[in-house]
Image 1: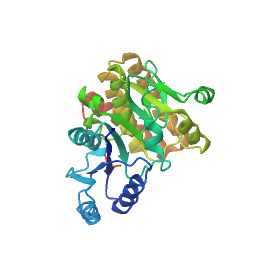
Image 2 (image 1 turned 90 degrees about the vertical axis):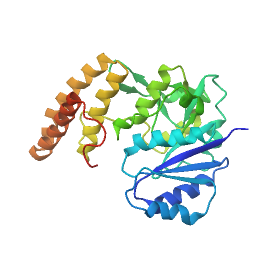
Image 3 (image 1 turned 135 degrees about the vertical axis):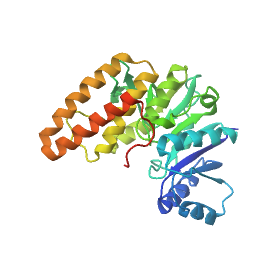
Length: 294
């Protein structure tokens, strides 16, 4: 019998967390165990979990804001030590799309003997350009599952314990941004297959839910600190995986982006320019982890 469990990353959102926990335990195939990985600096989340008196819940307080990357590494580690077979990688604000998600995802696990990661959405990845390659809808319509190179973050990803046994974990030094991409590319290099459930994927597209990693050159961003982490982490990922062509393309692309931002006015342009070149500077110095508040 499959032992299904998982972890939820949370940060100062106890009310939202309780709603997420309730929804996960309402699944047609509910997790037998959930670790709550708390990035909060106060005790509100601890008290909220204790008030539930639910033996299926385990609590781990990081003691500082380790970001999604650091919390995910700890969550996977604890789930592996708990003897779970399939592990849900969750976030308090990212609810599964319906109450049948786990059951439907696990229904495709045997369609590839090397399948060790499952998700509701994913993509191919251009290792030279460092860009996501969108899966065509007609391909999803012809199959029950499709093998991908990257699972979309925040969309009910399940990880098998064999991946952890191979020593693959998120890099906590990334702190925020593309930790799922980094994890999936490392797992892919180890020979683990990743499958997406085609019907679930199509349902997401029909509801216009974003399923790709986005770093558009032309789009004005509302949070430039996220841009800083995106560039810095993509450069580190290209080094970790020795993707030299990807790194060169990223550098030239983001240099252009630092200039292109002035299209939206001098205030935005200077802020955008500063964040991008700060990311370059910190990458050159080897600065990692949390450096700026989101």
